[in-house]
Image 1: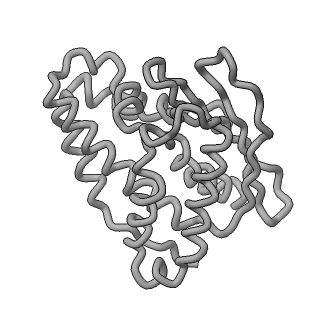
Image 2: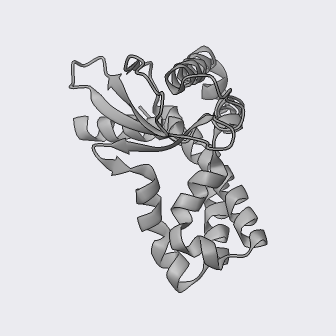
Length: 213
């Protein structure tokens, strides 16, 4: 049971893994951006439990408003596609990125149905001068005195704009980007990006459902 709860919480926090892209100010620390966005997300979920219970699809609205404006969908999608990116034309890439963005919205809205006011602690800010990649540790603390779940969020500084953009998350050394690469690689090799895009788009249409307690 504890293992299942741990997996649910980890999945829920994948939603923060690819946050904070083009609206982030270049001079803002990634630690500050992570704290602000996490605070907004979970505050809105907590404040709108009534709406969510009567209409679980409202979680999509919260995700769309609080997360998606900051999600670096294209960069995350490029990493997921890996070598297949070079063989796809521009139209195919854009269609995949659009489907992938919708998939992220649906996936994170669904896993966030499991959020129940867990405590989130973000590590103290460290200097980022001279660095282009930063890993930020986040501890997710449950109320049942279980050991904290340690999540490492990967941040990359945009060389053109100077913006810090979160692009991946590792839970117990398991990368979100690498997981999707492995999951979808056989489809890309055997059937191509168009087939994968269609499957991802279909998955994105799945309704948001609340788990029965």
